[in-house]
Image (cartoon, rainbow, N blue to C red; front, side, top):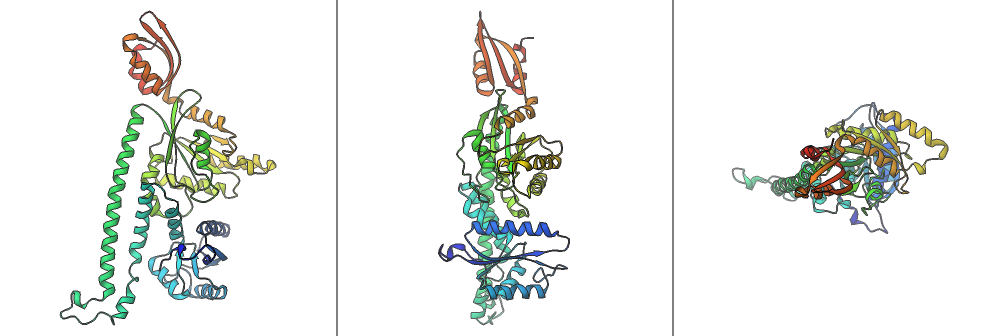
Length: 439
């Protein structure tokens, strides 16, 4: 049923036929855009795409999702084009996937499996690999039903063991029971390991919170330039390529804002339309950085004609995570790739879509707009810091070291037995040493 792209060499790529089934109520442009996105996804796996086409159906059908007539058209097209795999730009149930494979006689993948395959290739850290494994196991478990039927056929069916029981069952039935048990055990093992990772992350965040260091999560549609922005802000050296889901691994770096306030910036996995729900669940430990962040930096590719839709998709996933109302800055990235006469129009469109959210035009790859973004971060986090002068007894000089560590010390003067310090400090820490503040 399932196949691996590595079965073919680079010199002999899979001949893939891509079909998007247009469902009742869908708009033509939206379905076309999704199919164009699938072309990019499939190309990233090294497939040779021989045709991509939208097939519209008047009503949903249980067997193929579309009607039998449309399915027959796809079968004929696949045979005519000599396709050796079919990719359907929809989410298929296990039974629908099996029906399609029996009809066309070649392996069939749906949109979810394509995304899972890309995630599997991009994962690098142990955490990301575990997250992908969890999602793939959850996807494969209900699809095991038809995988061992050939063994039953070889044995002539269920046989005639006395009294039924194990002896009366076919080899396929016994094998699928074993496989399902192993799959469930593996799923539970991965979940336990991911819970350990979550606790470790929680401990790290607790230390940042204790020190009053704010955090910002970079979120956005895949390939919008999130990693490029992190590199521009922090010189993090994160992989930043013009491919979908270039990196799945969370990277955090500490920077200093113009007002001296430290901030931890974290890159997150990119979003995509029709993102499989099991991936949102499996990547909770990565997306938790967005959940607990004080500020969201939402990156949009302003050069993409679907920029507005991408913004809405990301906001929808953020709302699903329960963080849709967090403070946010909209970064209109890749503006250098927009024709100069259209830039004002594109910015106005994105600003109207974002409403009251601050909007910063940028080109992360060129480093343009960085100062404006940092200034917007200062404004968004201004309620978290306090600028004041403190008179600290030299006997409490340890407080000066904490000020240097957690805040920004502007000046230090020694007057008798006192240390006079001008500093920008997190409000939590400033409140603890309020008795030393000069009026």
